[in-house]
Amino acid sequence: KGWKTGGVLSLTGSQISFTNWAAGGENSISANSFVNLFANFKKDRMTWDNTLDLGFGMMKQGMGEESRYYKTDDKIDFSSKYGQYAFEHWYYTGLVSFKSQFTEGFKKITDTVRISNFMAPAYLNVSIGMDYKPTDNFTLFISPLSGKITYVTDTMLSAAGAYGVTPGETVRYEFGGYVKAQFKCNLAQNISYTSRIDLFSNYLEKPQNIDVNWENIVNFKVNSFFSANFHITTMYDDDTKIDIDRNNDGVYDGKGARLQIKQLFGMGITYKF
Image 1: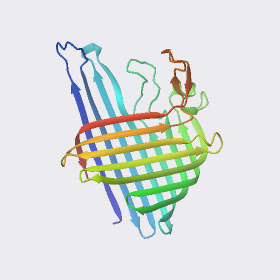
Image 2: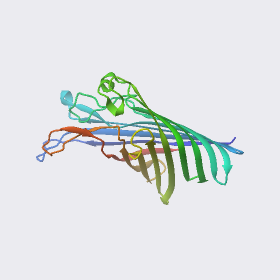
Image 3: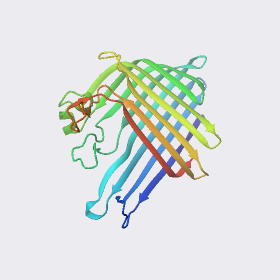
Image 4: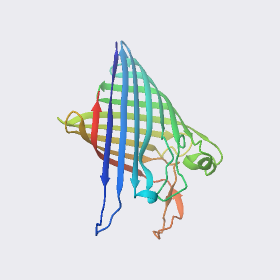
């Protein structure tokens, strides 16, 4: 009693094959999956909201011994938020969130040097603040007291000082302000939209350089089991340095923080409960 639970399971895929195709091309097959689960509790003056988002995708390119495999999606995102009623639609709230990925990742399909791995990076956020919940479709959490911990447990990445950790260290601590907002609605009878944004400012170092993680999902429902999904994620982290080509000669000659964008579109089987 008091619990509201549910989720979405989705599996999408694509395949392309060439035989004596004059224009050229390479055989490939790909599959992407994601799981979105929620368990929310509300009773009297107390609320407790929990979400878990998992995503993973792989592509196989080529045939036989020349086959190459690489990731097309990889995400672990957990959030738990506990609140006590304060006034109007505001709640005194504590939040814990965790983000990482399942397996190692590479910049290009031909690379052998990994740039990410499980728990490299991983982000743990612990925050205390106020949560504004006027409806079930919108929440705004504001925290002036937030701790962000970045983990890089992969030895090679830790030695390189990846994701802002001191070279050789596996943990980086930050203290600052945090804002998390989520909005969802139905754009049409069979089209739903969900948007979620996280903002973090480190009080102790370059507070004006705000970390951003903004996710948008549009779901087009075909029938009870088939749908199309469009995901776009925009990220910026001043501590995540990316290889850049400053003089456009095709050779990386430096590193810097850059806006990161990931897009994913798929059509397949979706089960909502």
